[in-house]
Length: 121
Image (cartoon, rainbow, N blue to C red):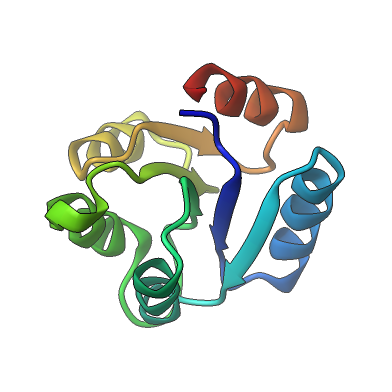
């Protein structure tokens, strides 16, 4: 199923702007959330095809929110990419164990991100 709707979850306004600008220019419908709780509300209200999830945020972190998403049967078709500045191999492994489909290191390489999104659909 091709990706059309993307939710960006990141507490950094700069990161949200950068990713939104990139993805809107490529024809995606993009919404954003500043933290995990807001993300869960938006996911429930308007199920995205793909979530770009930061890890370090106020409240619940991206690992916890990812785990919540993948354990919800209603959200089983939602793909999660973790996008984090945490660049240790143990972080990547932990993120994938939480149910993320991929783990990208910030700063995000726009071409690599677009390739990974294209590979989904």
